[in-house]
Image (cartoon, rainbow, N blue to C red; front, top):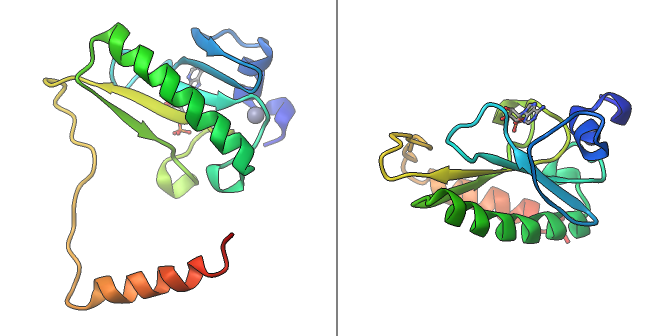
Length: 141
Ligand code: AMP
Ligand code: ZN
């Protein structure tokens, strides 16, 4: 998808309307039109980048800082009991819109949502996976 076709770029530029609740030089936040819970918000860097893993550290830093600010106000405004903070990264992880965005999902004691199913490791598997990741980490800054 090019930036000119990107729906979140269009929201950032104002070409498409949104229920915007925060804006600074680098980031905007607006309500998700199909909310998981009431107040579900998307925090979006103004500069187009497809995924979290491709984003510059500077962009990530600005996104996270703005998300904390917006998240605090959101919990207060919605009288929420908790907040899920998440980024879908890639199609297999449920990403539909390929312009980086962070979901802020207010949680309520009685909302009935169950987020992550939990599994088990086979004997010795956790060590092997740990070693694989540690090896990959050596190539990262
Ligand atoms: P993701 O699956 O992480 O890519 O999430 C995309 C999110 O964008 C979904 O939760 C949609 O409901 C939301 N969404 C799509 N179009 C709009 C829009 N025009 N305004 C606000 N939220 C939107
Ligand atoms: Zn975009």
